[in-house]
Amino acid sequence: MNFQINIQGLSKRFGDNVVLDGVDLQITSETITAVIGKSGTGKSVMLKLIAGILEKNSGTIECLKISESGESIPISIEEIGFSYMFQNNALFDSMTAFENVALPLVEGNNALPKLKVKEKVDHLLEQLDLVSSSDRYPGELSGGMNKRIAFARALITEPKVVLFDEPTTGLDPERKFTVFDMIKKYRKQFGFSALLVSHDIPDVYEIADSVAWLDKGKIQFFGKPENIDLISEVSIKEYLKTGRISSNHL
Amino acid sequence: MKSLLKILANFVRELGAILLFIIRSLFAFWTCNNRFNKIIQSTLEIGYRCVFIVLIIGLFTGMVMGLQMYYTLIKFGADAALGTAVSLSLIRELGPVLTALMIVGQSGSALCSEIGIQRNGEQVDALKTMGIDSIGFLAGPRLYAGLISFPILTAFFDLIGLFGGYFSGCVLMGLDGDIYWKKVFHSVHFVDVYGGFIKALCFGIFTIGICTYEGYYSHLNSSYKGIQGVTQAATKAVVKSSVFVLIFDYLITSFLL
Ligand SMILES: Nc1ncnc2c1ncn2[C@@H]1O[C@H](COP(=O)(O)OP(=O)(O)OP(=O)(O)O)[C@@H](O)[C@H]1O
Ligand SMILES: [Mg+2]
Image 1: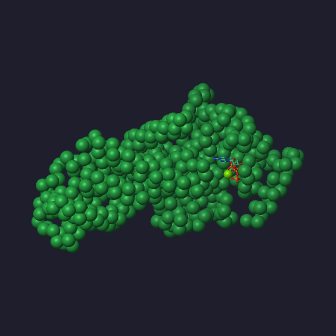
Image 2 (image 1 turned 90 degrees about the horizontal axis):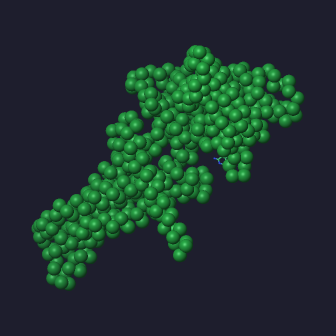
Image 3 (image 1 turned 90 degrees about the vertical axis):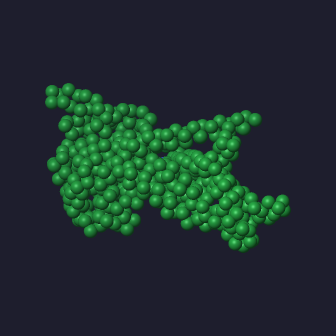
């Protein structure tokens, strides 16, 4: 299915704190967009607005399905099929790793039979090196393990749009590349689009088709990863410099 | 006067919101899968947390009643009526009320904090993104569990309370045990049991409703953000539920009598 999500003039404030002030962004089928920006600039808020968890103050988020004949029909993001990987994982403490990953398949609108669920979840857990922890609770697992469980939960429904909020923060370099590889692989397999918030610069460029730099409430740069170094603005140079230093430290 | 009106308006608004929340949860629950398991699990959770404390409180309430009634009744030479006095006050009033207060303190606060923490940790939002009705999923099974567990625990309370009364009145103070039990069986009618049962059901649905409501909206209704907001919500839930139990106990009693 071909689709398009057009975001225009998206604004959000909390009281007097204006977080987003006219964000324009377009997401098309099977593209990965890396969203970068300083901490606290509103990247998570932007994803939550797209997912409908927060209410926007103004602007439009328009989802369109593009039919074979090129006609565009408005639909909702739920109808496209989306999932959200939260920055803090948002796993249920009272459920095991397995149950957490299986939750959207057991409960959601498209619930599957038990055996099928088990097969799918086990397969995904195996790829993420989590088989030995599948019966353990999030409280008993490390931060990086929980991150991977949240990642698995986001992909288990084979969504068409995935909103990843820092999927690799806190992972060791090997696991980080596993996650990036899986995003690449699953994109090929299921053909999803992703909006991927990350501080892992420049590693994230490898899987991203385009980069969106969010600063001062707006998307200040949108384009191919290789072009971001070419722009001469001081603030992005500074941001990228600090980004480099922190990624070298990992 | 104006502020009094404001308080009253707030009270009515809140009551309405809670009522709507309860109705919505009860219906939304039917969109969830594995409903039977969920209800059983929630019922066991409440029962497991509360059965011990309910039995202890029930026993001692019965014993205190046995003693107090004994000393009151013996003044009028009516000590034979001990069974009647203990059983009626337990089954009609004390059983449902004290059991509800115990469950609120033991399970209601835990329930409220659990949902509040899930709100705070964005699990509630996560459910939404997975297409799961979060109210039905989180509050639904608990409400049905309240409907099941409150009457059962109340029955436990009543039973052990009767034994408590027997123990202090007959074993300790030396009244005739046969007369005690005969009076119990003669004076308790179906209406009394039915009245207690109605109260237990009513308390079950409303107190659990208040606790889940406060937890679910802990991010909106508290003056604090984060975990402090959750603890504030839990305190509010317990206070509101307890006040509710006592006010509605009076109202239901006046209807039933
Ligand atoms: N629920 C909320 N209530 C009030 N303010 C909020 C809320 N959520 C976010 N904010 C504010 O919005 C701003 C952006 O927050 P956001 O979480 O989107 O940052 P971010 O870009 O994701 O940062 P990070 O890289 O650290 O995750 C912050 O100033 C934050 O204080
Ligand atoms: Mg963030």
